[in-house]
Image 1 (cartoon, rainbow, N blue to C red):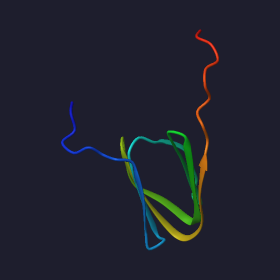
Image 2 (image 1 turned 30 degrees about the horizontal axis):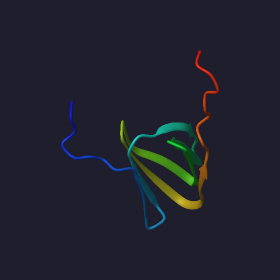
Image 3 (image 1 turned 90 degrees about the vertical axis):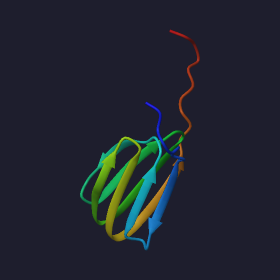
Length: 85
């Protein structure tokens, strides 16, 4: 099925209390105080007093944060296969 509008990967932080992410991602960790996502070669971690996932779909996540304390983005290159199995 072809999508009507192409989704380009993006991260939007609104007034330091909500985050919207569009594009392909993988939810790796979710607790009451943090959420971690992996997309392509980058890992995103968000920490706060209270972190709530408001919307979670295949290519979109909307997160609410109370008292944002940390946002980190790390480059994590995918491991290359040295040989074919």
